[in-house]
Length: 540
Ligand SMILES: Cc1cc2nc3c(=O)[nH]c(=O)nc-3n(C[C@H](O)[C@H](O)[C@H](O)COP(=O)(O)OP(=O)(O)OC[C@H]3O[C@@H](n4cnc5c(N)ncnc54)[C@H](O)[C@@H]3O)c2cc1C
Ligand SMILES: *[C@@H]1O[C@H](CO)[C@@H](O)[C@H](O)[C@H]1NC(C)=O
Ligand SMILES: *[C@@H]1O[C@H](CO)[C@@H](O)[C@H](O)[C@H]1NC(C)=O
Ligand SMILES: *[C@@H]1O[C@H](CO)[C@@H](O)[C@H](O)[C@H]1NC(C)=O
Ligand SMILES: *[C@@H]1O[C@H](CO)[C@@H](O)[C@H](O)[C@H]1NC(C)=O
Ligand SMILES: *[C@@H]1O[C@H](CO)[C@@H](O)[C@H](O)[C@H]1NC(C)=O
Ligand SMILES: *[C@@H]1O[C@H](CO)[C@@H](O)[C@H](O)[C@H]1NC(C)=O
Ligand SMILES: *[C@@H]1O[C@H](CO)[C@@H](O)[C@H](O)[C@H]1NC(C)=O
Ligand SMILES: CC(=O)N[C@H]1CO[C@H](CO)[C@@H](O)[C@@H]1O
Picture 1 (cartoon, rainbow, N blue to C red):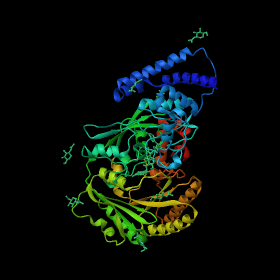
Picture 2 (picture 1 turned 60 degrees about the horizontal axis):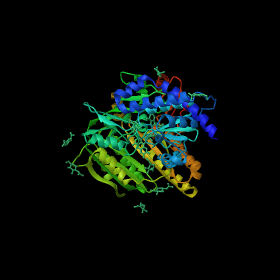
Picture 3 (picture 1 turned 180 degrees about the vertical axis):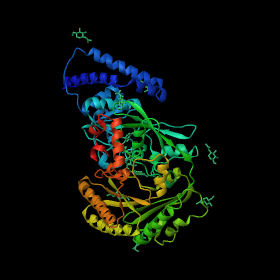
Picture 4 (picture 1 turned 90 degrees about the vertical axis):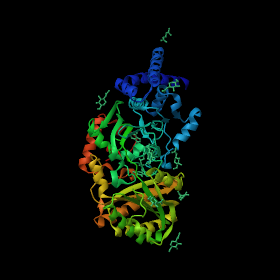
């Protein structure tokens, strides 16, 4: 046993040496001028030397052992990075390993990777890509861990999970462009920009991660004002699968820049987002609960609101339907003395049960924080799905009737929480995106509804039942919308489930652009072959 261990250690070192050779001078140069400290450069040089010395001193021993796969990748990562950053399921790191495993929002993603590795900077992330490439190990990248699809930001024992939570840095320049590392959650960016009287287009929920949200487009508060989250990105710092670092913006690598705005995890590891900020939004908001039995009137009010959104881009809202309540978020981008008449439909309902967040004059930051404070947080297995339709009350009513039937059937089968959200999208949102050079989602400039359906359950034994239930709801909505000529092709990545062809839903032209950009970024196709899963080109 010991000799096998020793042999694989030696080959690990040999590989480590070739890995250092793979690290381009360019990358080290970028790290030097960009954000890495001199001590980091010294450390890298020092470790590199140590590894080379070790390899030389062991040159007497020759052995051909299999260095392919995740176990070797983890061993090499332990040698190349500080061992305190690599967690394997062993006594010494068992505690950190267990913590790392349970980070994701959905328990279905709590997979037991061969190791979890936490690079401290972009250079180390690039090194990890080299290790993965050299060993041919499977890998997955995780930032906020909020994507509920198992295997996207998680991987089993045949893979390495690259956890970017330590890549945290925030700065803002003279023209108010905010730069953020992928390890942050949106609340960090909100607090940071609020203090400077600026607004950033981020997640509606405070603890969502930056990269997954932005790579999928990103539905922010007040989308009619400046478009989606991705529409405000000015530059990406990206590590290509060959460990070269590039900038992608309107002037450099513009093909990759455009494709990253909605194209998902097909290009490499994003290690910095440069984002346009806007003058502070004075958000006036409230979140109310209505009795679900009043759904016909609630949907009438929703439709009225969606019409009003076409005329006033300061309106924003969402409507979440649960078995007991309808949760209605009503947001306005100004501190008015009187609420806009667009919300009257809701104020006139006598099915109001209570308020989750009372009427407040605040900012997007306080809104995200207030919502977080009123939303219970607990672990569960979760699965979501996305669909897009035109706006029509009869569709909402018909789907709710079906939903009620499904609830009844499900109740007798297994313990689950089912819900769905109507996310109103205005034509202004699409226009704002186009005015900022556009994204790759292939959106149509009309009022529309982005639906997301969610199932939440506790018992692993019910995984299949949960999937069947969710897919059944989705199929029903799909059919109803199709029958009424209301179905749209677009599927929103951030709410979609792994069976849905998200990239295909962007249309042929966009799909071709994404493919071409992915080829430019990754001619060897490593993101497709070694990456565990995701909304990848290989799945379209
Ligand atoms: C509670 C909750 C609230 C949400 N609210 C919103 C919302 O308001 N608006 C909205 O649009 N969406 C929302 N979402 C959806 C969310 O945007 C997606 O789940 C998104 O994928 C999460 O991003 P993350 O960084 O946390 O994801 P992760 O799960 O870490 O990663 C998601 C995907 O991105 C890849 N990835 C991660 N980091 C990088 C990187 N640095 N470079 C390249 N690829 C990377 C992963 O491999 C994976 O494929 C919400 C989700 C939850 C659970
Ligand atoms: C360099 O290594 C030393 C110890 O080896 C460590 O204390 C220090 O934090 C490292 N510096 C960086 C920037 O990684
Ligand atoms: C290689 O082995 C020989 C004989 O065992 C020994 O004398 C020599 O010092 C070793 N070289 C290195 C670099 O370890
Ligand atoms: C932000 O705006 C407030 C109110 O107008 C002002 O008092 C404060 O000085 C501003 N802060 C900064 C950093 O500009
Ligand atoms: C909701 O309305 C139904 C039917 O009118 C009623 O039975 C139920 O008690 C109401 N629930 C709440 C929480 O008010
Ligand atoms: C919000 O601000 C407006 C304008 O100052 C004021 O009239 C209104 O009463 C405030 N609303 C709340 C809930 O504080
Ligand atoms: C359903 O939601 C409640 C909180 O609203 C939670 O306590 C419960 O655990 C959830 N049930 C399942 C099966 O996830
Ligand atoms: C890495 O890939 C990019 C994109 O294909 C290419 O331009 C670059 O030359 C490659 N770098 C190295 C060191 O091979
Ligand atoms: C580290 C981390 O983000 N853990 C989260 C995992 O998911 C649960 C349930 O949503 C959260 O409570 C944890 O904070």
